[in-house]
Length: 126
Image (cartoon, rainbow, N blue to C red):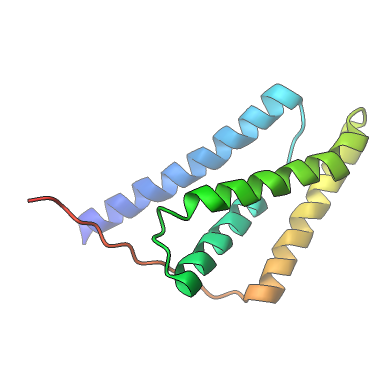
């Protein structure tokens, strides 16, 4: 049980570090604070969950189509919402906070508030 808790903690910390690296990279390169960054991650996780449960695809194989869909969604968001506001930092903060609240509440409305999990079988070669 202790080993499982340690591994889960390391995996959760790795996910948090990936989110933080993404935020730092976006702010460092384009000088945009994207408060909706975590919600895009949430959308990716829900997309992965539904690909696994409805189509039966291996969770590791869902990374490629999910990354492509989220890239397209991010490019659309950049072009439509962020690009027109590039000179005004306050408006960028307001639009990304608005997207954050919208995506959170839309996901809560559509998917509910209960936890969802995916089980992955690990095959250790003997």
